[in-house]
Amino acid sequence: MITETLTEINLLTEKEAKMYYLLLAFEEMPASLLAKKLNMNKGSIHYIGESLLQKGIIIKTRKNNISYFRSEPPKKLITYLERGIEEAQEKFAKDLQQLHEIIPFLEKTRTKPSQILHSKVSYYEGLDNVLQAYLNFLENVPENNTIYSYVSPAPIEDKKFRKLLQKTIDKRLEKNIHCKIISTYCEESARLKLTDKHQNRETLIAFKDLGVMSETMLSRNQTFEAFYSTSGMVANLTTNTNNAIKQIESFKLAWQQAKIEDQVNCKLPEFQQWLIKNKGLEGY
Image (cartoon, rainbow, N blue to C red):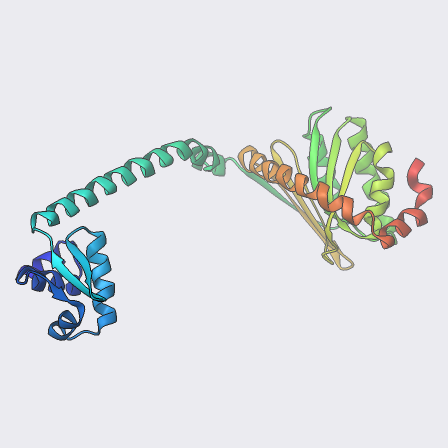
């Protein structure tokens, strides 16, 4: 009954309760005798004894290289319980304070139902339609602003597509929109870097070619995504300020890491060869 109560209130484990209760009936006991009476090995007795020592309800002594244990007065159980309550209250107060500190950030991150309902998503398919999606995106970016882009460029050989893309570059320059690009490591990215100065753009080479031609562009209230291959092109344009702002925040973090990777990638012999090969584009 007594040992069951001690375990039911989560004060002691079953083995701790049995050892403590046994010690109450003796002035002190050696570990070997405790092991025999509790049907445990001496290693277990020492392990349980250390736990009870930390809780402050038994005492351990050494005589002639033999360990002896004796119980503390039962009121020490109340002391241990009260100490646990105080520690739990302190932890609760600290946890609550930390939670209060991050609540404003959680509220800022949370997408409100009204924002989801007011999202506008448009889907485009085919070369001409995707080009129009690019132009629609730029049309809604105010003059003298900055857009952010992740790019895995189309091959240089795709002249038709590049000719159409030039229209988007012209549109961007017309509105004096600056562009920050994090691009894949490939020859086409070397061309981007060579023409940055003349196209109001800054390109960082930050990751290896993904093998998928794509582009993601971000403005303060829009997200544009395009994917293209030899079999066709698709794009979607999403208008949602909350979503765009969060993605731009992530881009700015990626930009800091990209600066480091760009310094390494641009020094590679292969990349230097690409720059030399396309040197004539520098004044484009």
